[in-house]
Image (cartoon, rainbow, N blue to C red; front, side, top):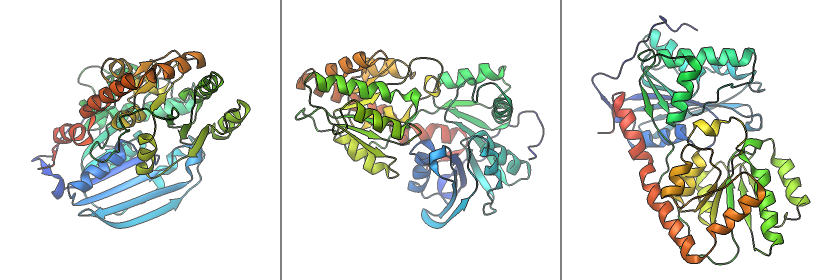
Length: 398
């Protein structure tokens, strides 16, 4: 796919364009609530003239549908579903086969390198003005050693150099990507740190009291690096020690069935409810509002995406006013402990159980942690997070 010259070509919308006068494209992978969906909602709230969103499947359990949705002045105009073979990561290149309505795009947001490459090709043909690479994860060796990682790195390196701006979730991701690709100053697109946020005005919050059973909640992908196995073992420890626990697990993944079997084997099948993937984030928010602690017990062994990112579940827990139990993996973990009422734990079931006990040590302490969580969350409202980087590329809400 042609992308023009190899040197950097970085620009902004000039003169700046109001959202209500702009044509915007969002191209992302996965269907869980994240920055692509937040950007969509923000633009629709500001009456964007034309919006096209292209969503590709990401994980094996995510199905094989590619969804192309368009809006005109905030009103849904069309939605098309296209099915292609889906065997990630081998079939990711098939994303480029998805055809979309032809329109001139003022701001093109690519949430993966393939999407950015399509934007660069459109820009080279005069069909796009500004192309933004929105990086939602980073890990040094993406697909282990081999051709897939080399191909991924080559495309990611091109996107970093040729996009007009690069948005990273955290400084750790920015720095890790720069080191991985050996970038020198001035060689890449301007970088803006755009952390995960939350819709604070619409999220229900926990009740400021601690009655009945403890209600831990986990929200996220069910894979080994998320540490849900030791979390289940921690629940079993608490129950054996006489604690009343009713937990919720929200999400799907390759460990869904194994974790259900593990809960049954631990004798806590009646104490843990597996909800699976819930597409409507408002239902997820209602579950969080009934919880008493948000759990994010990431595996501390080895590298993972979380070490370089800003996990969305942590911001969702904060917005709900939940005290948090987490391991020291996410870059934001120290700030959560210092300002957000969180308890940092080692990665083993006994330590996790003790951390959950610490959060529930007394109603007064729990309410203090809840208040700290809600206060810290105020820094992460989506409008405040999205406005500055969008203005930096010339897209304004006014």
